[in-house]
Length: 341
Image (cartoon, rainbow, N blue to C red; front, side, top):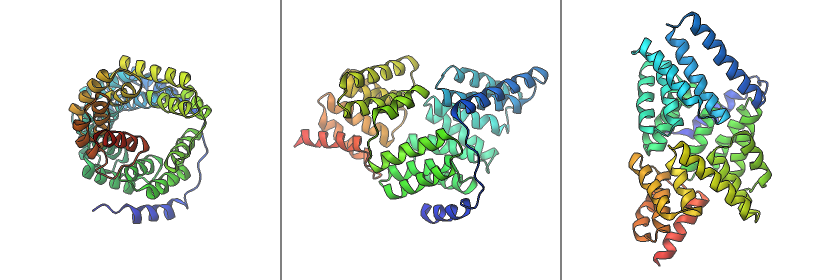
């Protein structure tokens, strides 16, 4: 049985003794990753048979895609990781981790789980390998497996990556006080301004505090991901700026249609701001890939907006089965229940 509270309390005491690290601006982080990629490319021109360097280059491109929201880094990552595995197909833990991280970024969660399991078999003491598993298993709806991997990750490396995952895990189980505690610990562990801002943003969301649209406009200017565009749109809606909000939703949906992969977000946007039939197509496609609380909520809502609330209710039940009480999920559920009264 996973017992995170004693562990988190112990980690707080231990990590409080660690010396603080200097913060690094986001632009500096991107430049550092780019320099690392260039250095690895130069090294590989001299030693093209270096499987480890290819794996490191692939992982760097995965991270560059994350911090810049530039999907062009994904095929570069795949090319480098494929070459690493060609040179060293067995026991190549770094490449397994990189392929798992890439698969998670592309929302290919079953593949990410498989790569994560291969990585853990080779690198049982790698927090990064456990992180790949946590992300994949959470999205696939394997709560027990995600709990085990998360506990192992916390054991191995208590830091921003593990504490933010712990906060998410607690939130999905309706344990908001513990989610806030884990996110506060993540904030204390943050080493860059972007990490700190991410933690503060989610602490506000956990506390139910609304941020002004300008906060999200700045976030979108740094990383115009569909997720951030949707948050910006919601903040604009709450501020009564519905025309501007609709522009953000439309842009997010355009990105999702172009990039593919994230049918979950596309389903939710289309259900609220687009075509109900398209929303249901997106939701059913995502449900075929993974049966998590997230996809259960999206499918329930898509069915509801298509006037199929009786079919939606079992999926809504599944969405809250772990204890998840996200305001949007509760709004969806109340509407579904209300239509059946």
